[in-house]
Image (tube, rainbow, N blue to C red; front, side):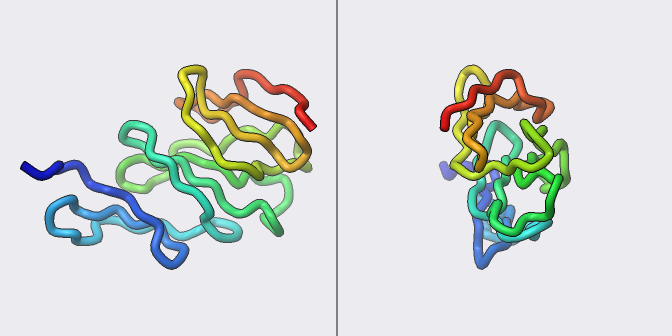
Amino acid sequence: MPDSAPHFELTEGVLLKRHAVSGQVLATHKATGTRIVQILRVGERVVVREDYYQFPKERSNLYCLDAELQPIWVAELPSHTDAYANAVTDTPDGLVCATWEGVTCTLDVETGRIRSKAFTK
């Protein structure tokens, strides 16, 4: 029996939610500032990281969407001049991602708030 959970994919810079069996597009999400470079499914949610290069200043390029691709949270930045530059990973402690300014942050998966941070550059 095929998995009936919808699947998410990145196609031509657009995040698509597809029906697992029919392949029908159920929802779409376009980038908010630059282009989507990573999607990470975490339970029923999708964490999205957009390209940090030329992303609008003082806005986070990392955010979380629900299963319908509606916004849940935007990740807290360690400083107003920083941006998330490396791949996001899901760990038992939270979402981990390093920034352009060399700070590795662990984010709360429920809120996007920084749980811990360490300068690593």
